[in-house]
Structures are given as C-alpha cells and as structure tokens.
Amino acid sequence: MVIQFIQKGDFTIMNVTKIKGGQLDFSNVLKLREKFNQLLEEKKYKVALNLKNIKYIDSSIIGFIVDALNTLRNIKNGEFILLNVDKKIIEILNMSNLTKFLKIIDEEDLK
Image (cartoon, rainbow, N blue to C red; front, top):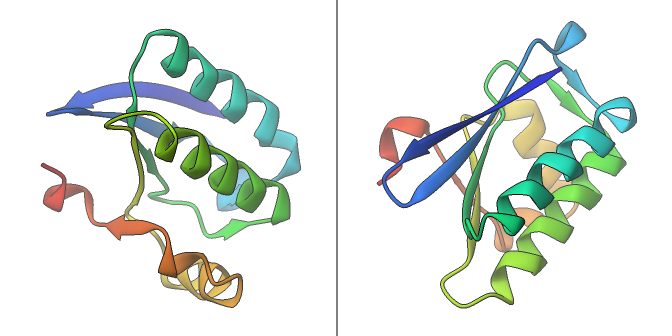
C-alpha cells in the first residue's frame, strides 16, 4: 500500500493506492494511522481519505475512520471526509450508521 498526500484547497487528501485486491483491512491500518498522525503533527486538520479503487474495508478500517472523525471534530476547524467511496463500502458504512456522521463526496466536489 502507498499513501500519498495531495493538497487540494484547504484539504489534504490521503490518496491510497497499490492495494492488493482493493481490500483495505487490518494489514493496512497501522500505516494508515501513521500517515494520519503525520498530518496532525504538521497541523493539517482538514483531511480527506480517498477510497478510489477500494472495494472492501473491514472493522479495523471502520475503527480508524471513527477515530479520525472524532479526533478532527475535537480540533477547531478540523474536518474529516471520505472521497470516491464504492457503493458496497457505503452499504457497510450504512450498516454501521456512520453515514449519518460522515461526509462522503466525489473528489471533483471537494472545495
């Protein structure tokens, strides 16, 4: 897995690429957390996680999303959003009731 940071407006996009089988799971969560913490250290508090080409997430990734969302909500002007989310992942997030709290948009709508 490769995570690149791309700046777009006020947001730093965590662009996740080179995922085997499109599955973002427990084997990736530590690196994801490391990169997120790096952004916090750099005082970048508007973060977008790009899930383009991701077809599956497990509970560890859901836990990461919840933690990131809560962390940034507790920081003035902090914001966490998901970009380019596959319909199957939206269904998983719906079952977890997270779509009530998460902003999910396509990348071209990011301002």
